[in-house]
Length: 374
Image (cartoon, rainbow, N blue to C red; front, side, top):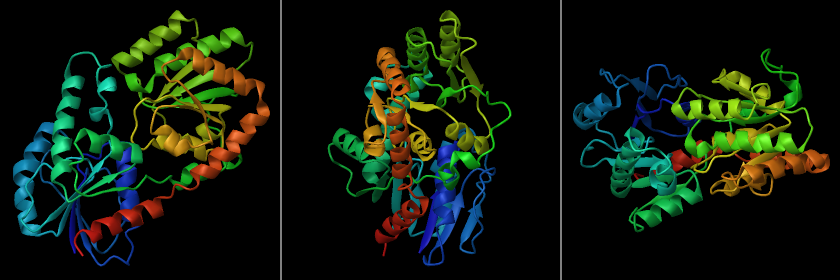
């Protein structure tokens, strides 16, 4: 079988990890050829039946990439004569050959969450999400298989599309092995303060609620005379990031809240592992990779109660209302007053996270793809 993968939209860490993991576990048991298009800087394993393809086109720009997919890619597919076209980014933007099956994935829930879309001010981001909902919906409705990465996403999107998707499967992401390493074996990054800290790792965005986390932390500091600081890791060079920095200044927390921006990915396991408590405050996820990484560190996690987080956290995390700073403050205070419960949650979180395996996810994905064209 010939499988062509269009992963040119894999420009974020999670998407790149997904593709690399699928290819790493391709193995010799699958008698197929893979031709993959993806950004030049994305590293993939070497395998005799995996061929990296060049688009020969400036696909970094989404408009130019869409043009390439619509017109140039169609001709390339005609010459490659694939049995399956796999578009993990969620969009099938070309017309495949007549006998070619198509597979896509749902990895972005924001376009299908109207309440979160409305939180963005009128402008490009709102328009972009509206366009994505329309184009992703068309792709899913015409695909021969749609892979979801949470049951919540599958049920939500199927309902929104009047159960029109003809073939679906749910395959959650795995957890990278480096996030399963115990913290006592990891070196502390030089920049990381020696103080005890609460940690939230996530790119700054309105649905990730860093503003409410800062406000909840301020309430906690007012109620408890404890030394912990708050560390926010993630890209914050945005209007929302500026809003959060303004709130930190307004609340007089400049010495108690650290915004690191992006940090080297290799440092994340140690930063997770040495936190006193990890916070995950997102209101909209598909498969929450950051939650899985947090749990894998074996630290107590305070997590958003919005779906699909309970699907992944189960009884191993402490839930709170992510839109309520007061609720976060109360949960932080509760854990501070109950060290035994903190330790119990830390153990449960790690045990649950170890069940998320990239090898299992990759094999399930390849088996599902091969099944549609036996």
